[in-house]
Length: 97
Length: 97
Image 1 (tube, each protein chain N blue to C red):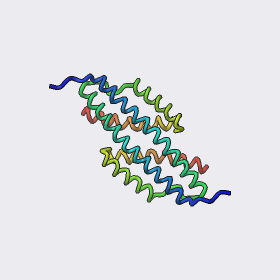
Image 2: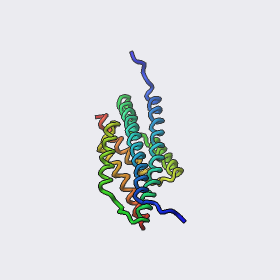
Image 3: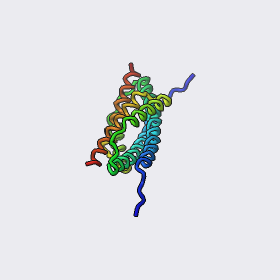
Image 4: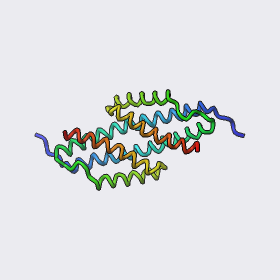
């Protein structure tokens, strides 16, 4: 015998968690872009190559492994990273003028 | 007089931080999708409407505000959320069969 749950109450509880996760994501993203901005400035100042294919390959491989371990779809993790990196490259181009 | 930094050392330091932020992002995303999976199952079980425009509008507004406060581009925050929600909807359709 199971007691029936109130689906709307349950939904509100899930959404409260989702809102917390989203706030965490936004804040970590903000900090990540702060750091990639520093990378962009450093690369511009010392004329370092804007992209580093070996580094990028290693990053994707590592994130796919982390995703698998945490039961996130590795394909999605890779698409997500591509999405973020596209934005970073856009910022770096602005820094280089 | 400023002492010159080693740009490659500095770059490695920045990258170590970026790798930590990425691991955090992947783990929070994994947990967020775990939660939206529960939402999808709940909605399917109780035949709740799959989308909730008022909720989605409030979410975007809140995330734009959080982004602004943490100096993340609010436009990017919104695009990011659209990207995540698209994946959630894809999952929910699979749950509903």
